[in-house]
Image (cartoon, rainbow, N blue to C red; front, side, top):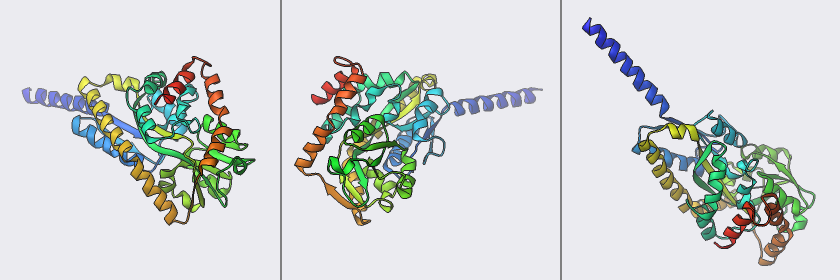
Length: 329
């Protein structure tokens, strides 16, 4: 009888341990391939978190589970513990997040680092707003500056944009091309290759690292270095799941996030340099803007900043405060 009781007790303990183990599994959805730099950065996060805790991290790349636009709802609802999404995917409920996509506002790496640093004035406004969706930002993943892709001719003047259908990945980026006379088409990052290949759009925008990871040089032959916006992705985690963890587990997540965030930010210039080289090596024409061309594009698209401020509370509103904070960086 004693042996039977011991066996029953042992079985209960095994089941209990299994339940605890299941609760400490962290699944992360990613739209990019694991070999892309955001995927490689998630491996850094995974390594650091598993080293510090009993949480097991599983990464589902290449939009296996969710497309970029589906991540905020999937994470916020608890359908999955965590996911990486372009920051602009939260603009539906929080239009102020598009601060990073205002044309030519963040014109140096120094400004971008200050703006995206944990605890910055900009993140003090954005992160709590995003968290209301149930998806809490853990850290921002640098994706580099936005560039233009086209075939045949560069996108270096307003005339080059006029009447063209252009792939964008956010409302404010759509407003940017509209201000230059183009027609925006909102297309997910995982679907842009086919859009270019099939001629669904005439041109598009992306981060230069995406040209390398998605082999976009196979379908577009000209890259114009506009650097008109700062592309940020964010790793978000379900708030209820995070709250269910022990203090030790949450601390481990915070520490792993800090390490991974610094790693991707520090390597961004190198990542972009390698991507430009690969694009050029694969036949793409790289076109730099002259000072005069930059000035013209900046002036022609200035209305985008004015419109952003108006739709985010007007003068003194959240958007206005964010723009002022950005200008002081």
